[in-house]
Length: 469
Image (cartoon, rainbow, N blue to C red):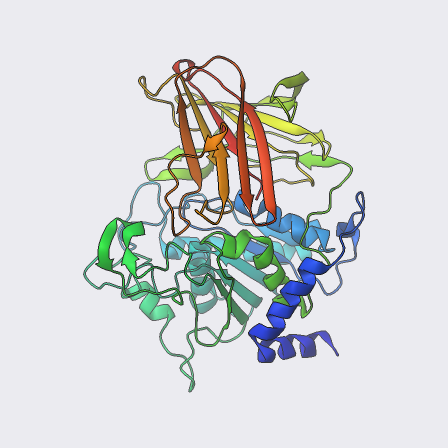
């Protein structure tokens, strides 16, 4: 069976075949350590452009890129967009400092796609987006010339029918399903009344009820008790392959290993050889130091900030030897490159004027990445406490009782039970005496433990324990 025929068969057979592909992927033996399938030839492997969501960054796709690489996709054909202003405007028709309109996001994506096509010599790309990133994909394909340049479009957790659909509540907001932006995208197309733009093959990935932005009640948008007119199937689209990933949250439907397996099967017509990440013997890391603006976080370079990187003892967080990198970043914001090993735990120290001196602890990086983007925390208030520690999960949310989340040996604070919707737990310590502080996370077979150190808040220091998955 040819690849196009396999793709057509996959689209026709629907969810049962996809579920079988996911099961097969989870049962496949893992490749031996030290192998590098990323060295495989690029024939038949289109470039893939990953598009992050509202308030996020290209770094959210780190583990997803590792999984594609571990299945033989060339690193040069995997590209993640880093939108300069990732937050949407309150009113899409009114300029707002530090925020972007739907048109601006689509134009930026169009430029990125053209750059990737020119660099690779390909005719089309695959697009995969999370949340608002899916809005940019749909808008680009429908209105900015993308239909002929995109072979597959994969939308994870995209609020295709809105986070709310209430005509009188923020009527021009990009996320209002009753507003002009989404109504135009969803207008029936062709005799079958499809909601997708003809050209690409479309797939949506959604939760079965654990996506905080696909809820019938407005609790997660600050309107508890108000009907949103949106349900769990809000991300689904007529004309797309609509896939449910049970129990997954708003970010996991894009960044989880199950989302990768579904996307891989959709693009290639077969299950991936592995959903694990195959370590490399030599790891090269780099990234951009980003800052803050009037509209919240930006992905614009924070020139003048200093990044120092230390190898640390994974059991105590204590530093080992001299710094591995120490750089005041320039106009491009790049803090690397840094060469290390897949067994080395790291501490990234960010010191930028007016911000907290941020100590970010990470478990060993199994593979190279140029997406180790960093942003300092806000400077702590004078009465913030003796020490501040955060446990962060950028590629997923914490959900109780689904997950076990411990911070400093106790249940992590600030995580409500029910729908998973919090990605950071913050702990205030009464004592800033130097000692280890531990974050433990377990969700099904996924488990990660990070050990950092306590630093004094009165001297502008904060500790962040950041999970890979």
